[in-house]
Length: 470
Image (cartoon, rainbow, N blue to C red; front, side, top):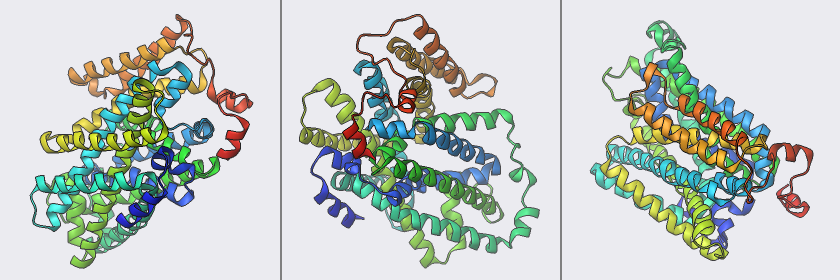
């Protein structure tokens, strides 16, 4: 992995090289980096744990994220590629001016990317402590050091290619674990007949919980900046859209197998096994020590590449959306590259503090997921499809949605409804109402980017730029 990072270092001359691989990623790196970030080790561990706890009902998350993403990719994916967007806030700057982009930049970089990086550190530490004699704290610190060095050296080049390599190992490990696990518990007959029926009842958790799972994951993946950046970093529109599409479909298949692995584990593991320990514990049960150790190390490596991907994505928000837009608009390319690397280090330190001192990182991550979707889902759709949306409407929408979600969560989620539903309803309602009663600002570009793209009237990309984009 570090060999790839060192080779990638020789290719990095500009900030575009560092954060976007100079817009040259091919199909396989795109597919690999999507799978590694959507269904990497942290996701596998969490998905197996949910399979062990609630069974096939958890596949609602898979159905939701894959469906929302595929619709999004084939409708506005080409628009993202044509606009050559580095980040989601970049879209807000183009449409409404830089004031509207500050909230999205802070939400994505600090509220989402930092806790997600923390989760990778905790995951790496749990694996390290299971294979070597080291304390949890030192294991977290070790993961932090390796992640930072890898990200600072290689940028998007190394992240994409190592993700592609790790994807092969992840797939091989999951499929082999499914086959060996099935054999270990006695075959399909045992799995079907001796597993409590509610594990295979998709509706066993009730319609409210299914709705909650669908809403938490579906809208978020429409505004998941990692997908946007992979589409833009591709060498062509076709490569980006199909790479992301295949990556998400394969991720969905992988998650189905992982849920089934979690269900198998109820036949061998104690019922009080912690959900986050199910995947690794069942691996130890099923595999011989030599093979199990190999796949345990591969899980560790996949967590590392996931950590670097989240650091790199957030660093773009800080260097371009905040530093270049607000602090020093005339910053040259080398200065932006330098700030990107400083941002990586700063975000990593924040993530380290969360991993060391905050016990419930998962809780923070879930809040980040829902707040990101609440703040950005409605405004992004408006930017793409509704010319009447105004800057005032978008800003009020983001702030109002977050406030309502916060209050809803604070009062204990009335009626068993997750805070994302009232947050989305209020956010979209405020966007429409405020926009209808306010005028466009002078710094707005009054345009529906999707309609302009379909009509061939987009003024933001020249013919020469489009030919480069492919």
